[in-house]
Image (cartoon, rainbow, N blue to C red; front, side, top):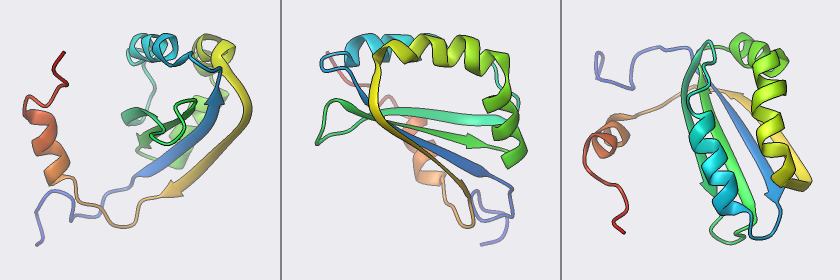
Length: 123
């Protein structure tokens, strides 16, 4: 339906990173990423950091951007190189990959509803 969130024409790109980390390093890496969430990046709309359920030493980061140019500017920036990469590099080993894609169709209403509810993990 026109006017519904997720149905309008919106320019958005996704950067998906996959990598392997040192065995047992997930708690420390997660702490690093929590701190890195506050590093500003022009054009960044959202960021997810996730642990592979089948391989606890596998990780994905999914970032949502307003344009491919914003991704390229971020990847070329001193903040990315000197802050972001420097913080996570000690934990990353072996294979890595990065994929970029342009979003063609999306719906985020259920995601937004889930984020607005108290869905945090209980201790």
